[in-house]
Image 1 (tube, one colour):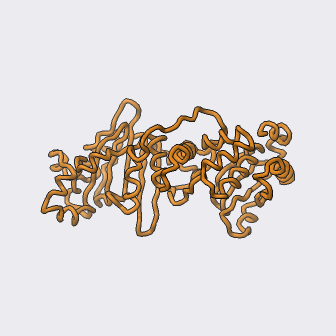
Image 2 (cartoon, rainbow, N blue to C red):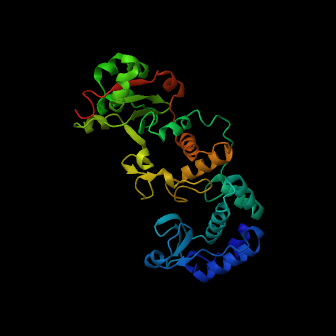
Image 3 (cartoon, one colour):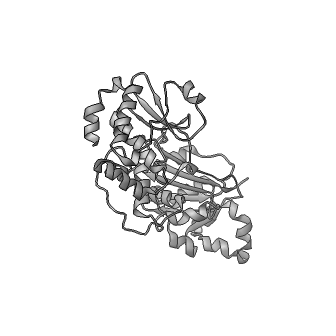
Length: 352
């Protein structure tokens, strides 16, 4: 069906108009009982017109003069940009099916009944159905997602920071911790988390936990976990010498229920110009980021996590599993459970 729609209705990017959209959607919806009664989302022709529309997070379309169609949830959150009519029709259908709340697997089945290519596209999480889709085949709560639940409650740390060097190099975890302000004596002594917890029956660490950090390496990534870092001059030249090419920073502010994801490559923040991304935007079955954008690899990984692990109902666990699958982020679960992970207090405390 998708190829037929493209052949019949895709006249060219410059010729997509509201009438073309309306007629194409009417014919698409008429072919499928599952789309019965689903109308074309509201179409605006300017930002001002979109802002005047009734407040809603439902899909609406902003049609530029050159035929570019911008999908928005609300007046500002852009979820796709395309000049391909067939893509617009698919994304309207996907949105309509997902909003029924039947779950990703049923949504995939519904779209597959409309067109096998649409079903494959939904399962891939991308804007096409290319690429091999392989089942996960492993425990989703082992690599990184095991920490997702407690992290929402600020345990063990509010900030999960990961850095990675260019291929063939590694970022030294001890040097990273020292540069951020870890106590040199504890780093040199190889202090473990269980050592900090053992002092005075654990009461000392309970009082000083906000002054501590844990660090180490898992796979290609070096991690540094903490609540706050010391307020002191930062040696940017020494930090640059670590050879960091990528960084991921996850932060939790549970008192405000704000959880953020910040990813950089080189000097570029990978965010589709959205800024620091709040994880509360993610809903099952809905791609969390701009379709076809810089973070589309995470859209694909999140969709695979949903379909591979329907037993996971916590969206943070699904999201963290997607981070492991797409970027390779991991944390050593057993080391944390047994207190074997490297740890230290900040030298002189966070306000030194």
